[in-house]
Length: 142
Image: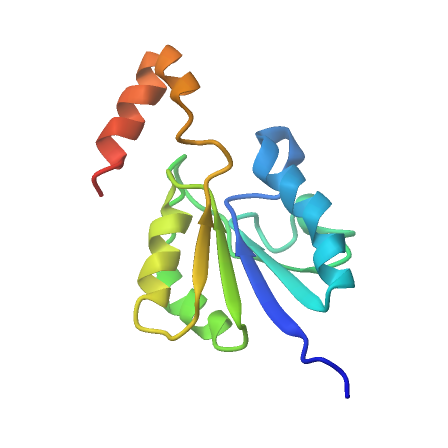
């Protein structure tokens, strides 16, 4: 008897590797998940035709464009709710942009487990960057 394949969806603002570590982490970890019978789909705010969504060994879904650095996307909750119906597990990459809040809103009434992968975003190192630290202090209570 073959084990049931787990369907995982990962959410992050972009797959553009110029933007930092979370994108690289997704690319490096996904082949290991595949070998362990976990099918991965990545949802980003890249436009559907973005070069950053091409040539990956996993399915990608681009929901962009978005119109600010925060990444607000009108109708995100309902779009994600429809996508999530076909998945077993969700991983949200990052904390400080709308994809995290919008994903939580879509999942809060669904019976799908999810995890938030911070990628070191709460590291005390960022206290050295006053504006970044201030922004995170303001966002944290929400």
